[in-house]
Image (tube, rainbow over all chains, first blue to last red; front, side):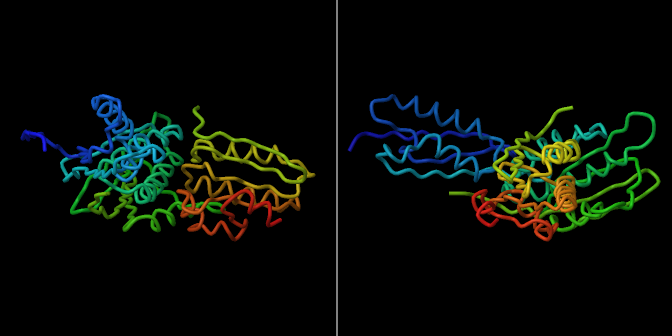
Length: 213
Length: 115
């Protein structure tokens, strides 16, 4: 039995930090310095950092582990420090259809940072997409219109607000009511509030603590 | 205008397959529907809309599906959808009862075999 020395280190883990714990089988390969394995792991983890912890774990394993040649066993634990209300998302976007895809990107990164699973994040993203599409479709006035999307965590729930300065239009034509129907089906709560200043849609989804093996 | 989705139209005999890869929203749903409708000629009997590679779809995409179903029905043609089990868009399609106008199949082979 060789002589082993353990070193104690401290690192800050602000909200959104992802921590990977693993056994040496993940990085060690025969006839190769272990630094190469560390590099591979860092590259794979950084490439998948925007993904949920679930997807990140799968991405790391599928990049680093070749079942055909793997000699040692591998265990990987991915943890992400949840946002505790301090971190918010706040966006002001032009009220045009081209803004919808970038909005989904930003929201996706934010929700992944909260540790939301891909399925849960997708459901909320569609709901937010519906509210945003409504703001875009009913953009108002001759000047360039914008709408605002804010997301925050309140008591273990994600609240997403979509605000514009237009009026929520009663859906017209075949199939136009589906947006609201989808928002209600895909969230815990969906509330549309009208005022003289505009329309505010509040969408709420529950956030679960998550750790994946 | 950026297009979040790529459309491929293929033709095998009386079957036309329209494949949408990427994301469908308000920015591209209407033009995708127009492109698909324009690509389906009268001699097509069945249009298969393959959503296997569709990563995002909201009510704009649902309007596209119902719009296509309506268009092909008026021409005496049929519409089938390919939606793999567990696909992200599956839940949205089911919530909107898209199956009422076009049968959903998990793979292209199943959609073609059921004809």
